[in-house]
Length: 262
Image 1 (spheres, rainbow, N blue to C red):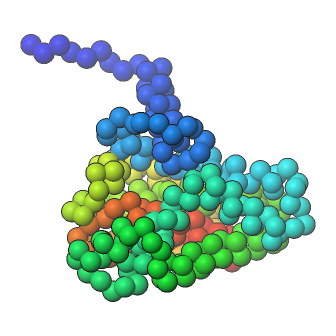
Image 2 (cartoon, one colour; image 1 turned 180 degrees about the vertical axis):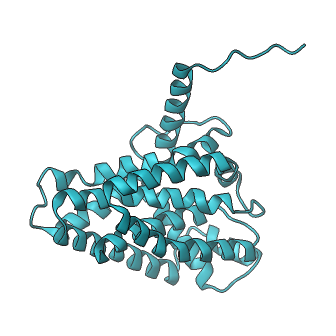
């Protein structure tokens, strides 16, 4: 008979999840030194995506809750967006620009993927970066100017969490046909359990940090992006890391726009 594995203990589960969290920090942020990560280990980070977002959001709002940017909404919004880009090494913005370049070309099949994987940024990618970063800065400035500091901080902290939960949502419905081995790890990790954990974490933190109204309005803005990228991935027979990066940016924009308009 095969040897039975001992039941997992609470301390063992915590140690395992902490290691998963550190692996994700090393790959997706500057907060842990980059290192070699075991094959398949990145798949487990999908269930912790909202936690990475909350941590990044909290760090990006340090100038706000230290009072450094009090009365300076534009400077505060510039610091918020800039810190987010620095903490993530611009990882998701790269995917955002690549996807817009490929989509804007109207190419299909292999040509679509060649354009997306080209390291050079085209006109559509530049326009997307200007539109995306400009949108994040304008919306966060509106939030900083129009809300009490505590409420503004809540929206700014939660926005990256919504973006990363959107990544799990999109990946759950994705196909691996044209996906790289790295992107496939994340798609493999987008299981029903990971999706459920991410949605619950994002929903509870959203209600606590922003309130029900902003959360629901964020979902209204998020839905078209999820649907559009899902259709595009099916039309192009694949979904890779650039799709994931793009939907993270769209999710952040959705939360910030909802906070600005609310």
